[in-house]
Amino acid sequence: TPSAEFNNMVSVWNAYQCLVTFTWSRAASLIYCGLRNGYGYRDTVQDIQGIIHIAPELAREKLLFMLSAQVTGGAGLPLVKFTHNAGHEDTPDDDSYVKATGHPSYRADDALWLFPTVEKYIGETGDTAFLDEVVPYANAQEDTVYEHLKRAIEFSAKNLGIHGLPAGLHADWNDCLRLGKDGETVFVAFQLFMALGILRDYAAEKDDSDYAGYCEKFRIKLSEALEKAWNGQWFVRGFINSGADKGKVIGNKGDAEAEIWLNPQSWSVISGFARDERGRQAMAAADKALNTPYGLKLFDPPYDKCFFEGALMPVFNLDVKENGGIFSQPQGWAILSSALLGDGNKAFEYFMETSPAAMNAKAEIRVIEPYAHGQFTESRRSPYEGRSHVHWLTGTASTVMVGCVEGICGMRPVSEGIVIDPSIPAEWDGFKIEKTFRGRKLYITVENPNHSQSGVKEMYLNGKLITGNLIPEADLTDVNDIKVILI
Image (cartoon, rainbow, N blue to C red; front, side):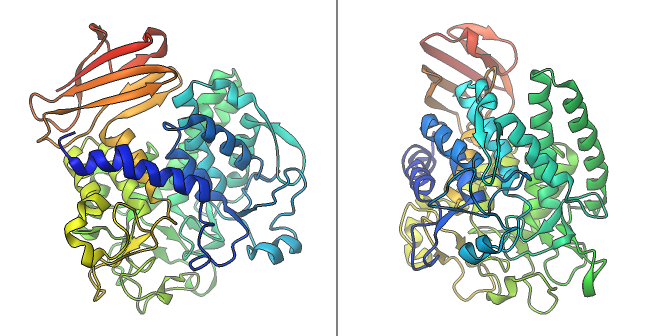
């Protein structure tokens, strides 16, 4: 591309960090994590996404391993021991597991990360038979991958709150947000919405019409519940339905602290729920309130005096880490959601704000190792705005890789073939990609004669005009020249 920073990160340094975090998860640091005796479930499943296009065979092996760490009730083990023995593990329901791992209960989101990861793996490889692979559960029994995914939906369905949204349980990706079995999380509701759509389509392909119908009805019901989370300008973060703070809405207009949160806005788009004017409005609100020269804040304003029981982030200083800091992992989701909305300028802006390759002239501010993503960056209320921390031990590499490859570059493998739908800065004349896809070489040239941000006008495969922006695998030869002309 015309951007050296983008080329260096996507082709080299971000890819390298994806492989490192895929291999080590969050278990590589005695300093940061202590003597951690296993892999975080959500961490590891998300990390797989970043290397699927680089090493799909490694992704397959690790994905099967993580499926074997799902319990029969559908949830994932919060921590998967290095000594994991599928079919014979204890769980958070057992005192022995809690004593060994320190995890007293299940998290709302763990097993839901399986859905986009499985979808990306099948899309990249075309390995639809993966759904029929038989995998043991962590604690007992075994089942196909397809049935494992059904169990994940069942777990979410059994843990809904009074508004019909998923309960927050012990955590919902944000470990500092403990909403419990009564509180509800909008972020996870969008994850569940996406999961139901993915599994509905798999069920239809398998002629499992009853279950496909169940997924669609559940999705419609969840959509109705999500309407309660829209405040007219953005999506709220969650609801507290018990205790002293019963009735509190988290992340609502007029809140003195934590008024607007980033993740519900980006995931409303990523999930497919709001890829329309409402999604654009939500992302615009997030951009206005949360964007900084160093990336998007997790929420704003930070908690100081108005936090509630279950909000653990005030243990950090204002605008540091989970307390309104610029958490790095959600930056990839912001890149992707902006690209899906066709806003290539904004997607690339978010990339550059947080790209390590763009920070070499500010090394004395950033402090951490060059070319490596950190876990978070301190923001404007900190005296050290722009200082970053905890490189290597972060899921950022994976989310940014997905945001750049699937979002900005628009390379989206699906079971039938590959969709090419870039969303780039208007100033780019175009770009080129060399990609290996299911054993075939793709030489892709994207032309942007009218300097648009998105929208495919014409696509040619080996000189032949293709209708739409999907190239079927059946039409590919061993070596393929692909030309894409934007509107």
